[in-house]
Image (cartoon, rainbow, N blue to C red; front, side, top):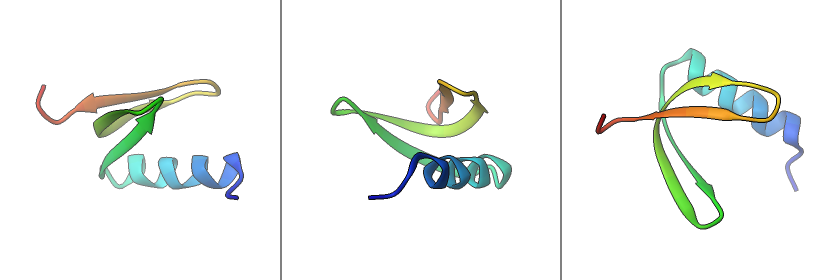
Length: 49
């Protein structure tokens, strides 16, 4: 299993490179560009906005 810090590093890299990501949380998908990463949250702006 991948630890949280590794996942966080991947997300930070995706944000820095302005990549589109798709995150699945509780069976709901969120797709777009990462706007912010905090200790307990991630803000994703949808590509369709």
